[in-house]
Image 1: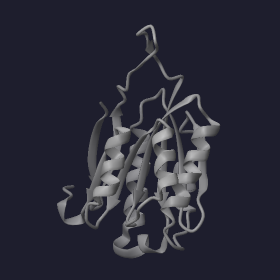
Image 2: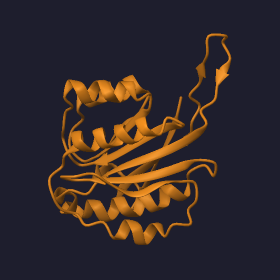
Image 3: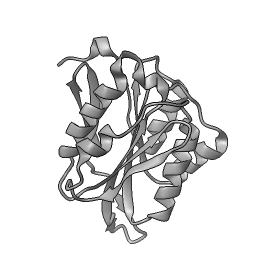
Length: 193
């Protein structure tokens, strides 16, 4: 199972996966190794992320967590509000100026988590060579329609959700568990520096 580390920074938590130990076997009971590991960050940039300086804190944590990824891993960053977009395409290198790329993101719009998840799903289907660890960071409360729920299960990815504030959502927690992912609720008052 995946081991998560929660680290606090500037009053908010961020998470990253320290170790991927997902095992798959073929019919001859031989272990199948994924070609490439991809950490796909799906980051909320809706207007509500301005409150309590959530987006600034999340950006800081994101920059730090990307530096902690295993050196043989790929990563990609997608942001979403009304419309999702790819901020950084999949790459293995930290040669991109991450600080500049993340700092260019404008926070505005409504949270459309379903559209964002479908966007990530389309990317995953188009890139089957990756074993995906999706890490969604949002303060939005949402549920998925049946079609999107099924797509998440089909994608054979670990779906991890870091919810910034609010109360736990049993429906989403069930989905995280079904994909082998983690569901974390980060509360400002519960985070230690």
